[in-house]
Image (cartoon, rainbow, N blue to C red; front, side, top):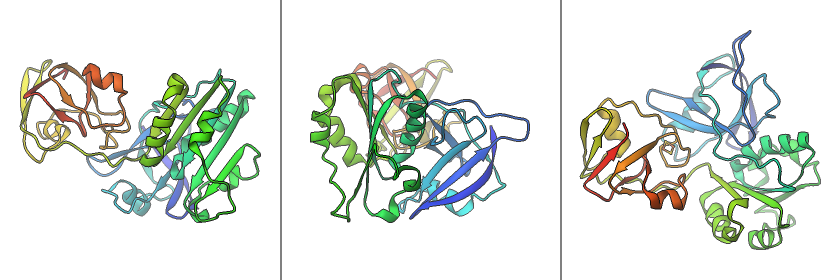
Length: 309
Ligand code: FES
């Protein structure tokens, strides 16, 4: 779909907010709290961003993009090229981070730009009249986006690393003290999520998380073959290539966005063989079952991987 950039707003150091609207008379698909869209950038490049607006607002989408100094072209392209009035390609919303609306209490934990999905969740929880609290940790105040929307609210607990007067975020204590009917959500940097997943493991299905970036150790040693069962083709993955590179180079159309195993766009069903899972998207159980692979970053432990392509 095409959407027009209605406005660009400076939200914090290196973070720009964008409002995207449909053409006159058209509409964009509805979304649920926690959803994201993929935006197409330069040829072959797409990125996923959480929708941060109120899901009840059908007039447009809001996203925020943090400039990544190590950007491989995604956030830098947006910061340097996206301007009001321009048309951009955006996917339909997808949700890998769904809000459990029936929970008696929702505890939201955000690190840095991980605040974005929490904003749509807060809007939804407010409409439902549900109880929630937000723990928002940032390195410095100038890097804290959307404080103007949040700071006035009693349910918001702000931790600023370089301001000792703000309370420290104690994940262990927070998770240990949750009411038994609470669901807890975390989006933040990889270290925060690793601690959250480890400390929160006993919470089982009440624990929800989403990565916004990852130091993924992408498999690109090659040396294995892909058998595409539906098309009957075989493709060798060469050293230096990812599985996704090999597929795209062979003209196989595979959807992808983040290229680092976090968005879920590139999931492919595995029919035979053993993937070398490197992503942060599939659950541990899904990885153990070897029935799917995220082709942007994962490799193969077997010489041949048969895919449903
Ligand atoms: S492209 Fe995002 S998980 Fe593979």
